[in-house]
Length: 185
Length: 332
Image 1 (cartoon, one colour):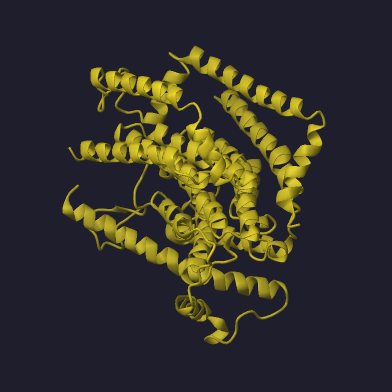
Image 2 (tube, chains in turn red, orange):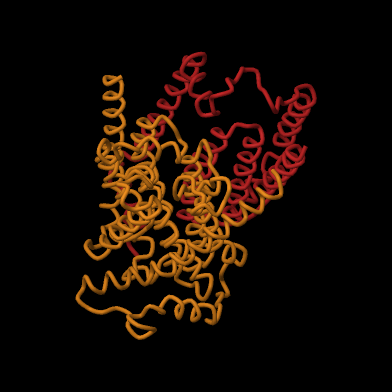
């Protein structure tokens, strides 16, 4: 029973923080709100008995990806005003897409109940969630798992290629960033 | 949970919290003394015999110091950051096992586990909390709105991301050997042989990466005194500064505990000493090594730090995992 109430509390906070992510003028506050959203999602995963996913959620999103976001925001020192313009241009499209997404979420949320105690896959009693995830990832779902790894690899290569194309002597640019952080003048 | 069990957990939390705070306070004295003797001087000598009361004097001084907040600072994050840095660090202690079960020399009827809680994903929890603790420094550096601390925060973000990968990779070998993420189970598997014997490369990577994660010399670029004044905590004073400091020393204890649990066999050792004493001894040896490094090595240059992290530590970590997995399959 208490789990259900906690679930509602975490979900409510996640929604509030997600709204705060969009409407904050200061990019660092936006990033902090997004970190909050990730943490609330992780709390909900714990309530759904998926401790492994919760830990990975925090390690990957909070511990790595959001640190990079904050790093870039701090390094570039994005100003407040620029965001506002971006926010108001093409408002109509945004509203249409937003409403469509909201409708879809409402329909899915209304028609599908989330299975809290037991999901679609049977979980043996003596295994913890880590072992279950590992077992299914490397047996039933090995193909999607491997395909995703290839997609990620393509993403990495794509990022490297794009980063190099913009500036043919990419090596030097990388050095500049390191030097900027590494020196005080 | 019955009320009795809740009372018990609260007692455990209080005892461990008090113990950690005490060790944090005296770790500062230990560090100053060790550094002093390595540099042939005496260190703090006036507060009590051999400066034994120095940490208490420091604490009182920090309590009564004026709490300064600069005009340009971002108030919310200025207040939040010290807490954001120390709370996740203290939360890690929830899963660290300090010993096997005990009845406190027959005082209790049922044996008690010497850890606040036992999680199946204990090790992942440690990494997750460590990841959250990063933000205290990053946001703290940003919130003061001055260029030195901003640079300190940016450096911390880049350094912690780079070395977190190596840190995680370094313990994969142990996870493979133990087949578990539960810290108590990992210790139990080392009853006959410590994992440092099977995982020497992993242990060295772990030690280097944890010194980098702790932002200590030779990796103390986020707070490099000679170039960034004090880096990410330049404008902090009083208890907020003390909280950053306590977080740093608490992290040293955390890293030493994790190192002991993962590589040095936890509380296992020859039976002429009780398990808890073995555990404490190992933790203190690791803490001594971390302090020793500070007295030995000069600070790296920033590009050296990045190159070492990405071009030496991470490839070595992958090779170590690969080799461990192959040997495990061959043995089985």
